[in-house]
Length: 340
Image 1 (cartoon, rainbow, N blue to C red):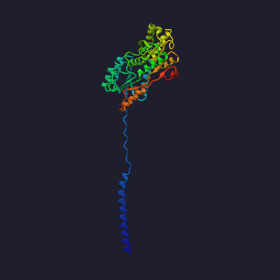
Image 2: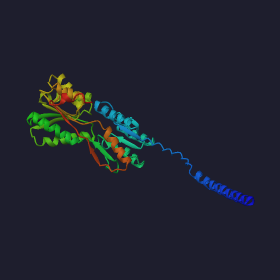
Image 3: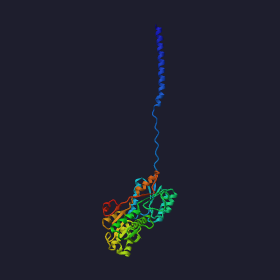
Image 4: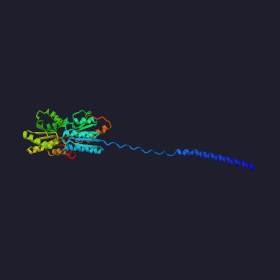
């Protein structure tokens, strides 16, 4: 009996040894499995490369009157708003300097050029230099000799011919189609002066009793407009019944000349002009200026919209026309605060 018990005990011990060995093997097999379930270390995120700051050159022809100052401020403010580096130059009414200014911008390797041409023909060398350097040029407010899509990207401007037409139609209604008109023209050789004159005279063809009895440039300046008007008054005197000025600055100069000569602007002589500046609207409210066709100087948003589209590779139309308003006694007072 004791021998049987010993055999049973020995058998039980063997079973336990095998059982423990099996448990050990199981644990060893499970250990690698536990290691594979550890979370993987995440790789650090790649840093995005900073976007390149766009550098834009703005060649202004001059900055000596409210319209030009408003245009310059619009470009500067919009560039700052969009985080664009702006290279600004003022040609100081000199075409040769403007050509040189553009060449300097090319040397500085700007990405785009905004150009307000002083003359239609004189800026060809600047456009060709930019074209050779493969720098896109966007014309603003005035045209220049060349072809859109080849020599420059596009022209953003008002419809100058339409402005002249609107001025003439208004004057025809005020004078019942009968007037002796002094025309104070803009800068000789500029596209705007030509278009505003052509548009005005095109309408006069319908009114044989409306005649331009004197036409002379005041170069878009108030002082020049006054001086030219003084000379014309001496030559034509009270034969003058109307004045058409290509911009408000010359119109205000003409008003001063008429008053100095003892003539009453708004009564003896009816005056119409173009631009829509604050002083012009004040003159309308005072009864001295009859009306002004707006030429919006706020080119900043539209100019930089074009640049953004070019950055995206979008197609740009050959011309972008700015919408303009018309101011006379019916709405001048309500728009003074918003005027430049």
